[in-house]
Length: 267
Ligand SMILES: Cc1ncc(C[n+]2csc(CCOP(=O)(O)OP(=O)(O)O)c2C)c(N)n1
Image (cartoon, rainbow, N blue to C red):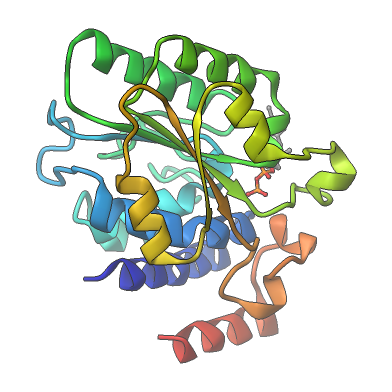
């Protein structure tokens, strides 16, 4: 499987999962499908048959509302049966809407309350450094999530301890849940902000797999890395792209059918 195939499957699964369950956040999931595809296919050291292997790289989706992307990536990589995805968001399922580690092999930490997951990820990177371990830690955060003060406290911490094993990917789709980032709380010069906090910053097109791969494989000697991935919320389903309605709306009826057609045509 290539990273592009994995990204396509993540999109296809997520569409089905949110359709069947009536779940939200399809646009936020589509936004990171390429990032997840490259991370899980080409970059991270993973052990689907031994999910807690000490040598594994760690990943935390800090914007936990896009959890379906993690579940789909894990299932496709063999952590659990792809059939389980059909239970997403239903009563008694281990696959909750916001990503959960409870009973789900491969998920490191439950998230959903923005501004928390990335801080736990920094702690994991710190532990790796203290124990002189070689694993890397990755975390995906939203640009709206950058409004949380805890994100910047984490940025100070990671720089202070020179956590060079730590990479944060900002899913910079310029939108939040109800409006654009600009109208909600201005977030200008995002790259400069991270640089000012001492991080190595790489800006890329978050849907370009070559750029993603190169950036994710890069590791600084003495700095934490922030990849600002310019993305489109809803990417891959044209009527969802940059349309704030699809933060919460679930794909049903004609919307669902048209979305399926678009994805199948793009296969
Ligand atoms: C602490 C906290 N406050 C509010 C929310 C509600 N909420 C869920 S998603 C979201 C928008 C997040 O925007 P962004 O980080 O840009 O992610 P996107 O959905 O655009 O990918 C908000 C405010 C939350 N989950 N956690």
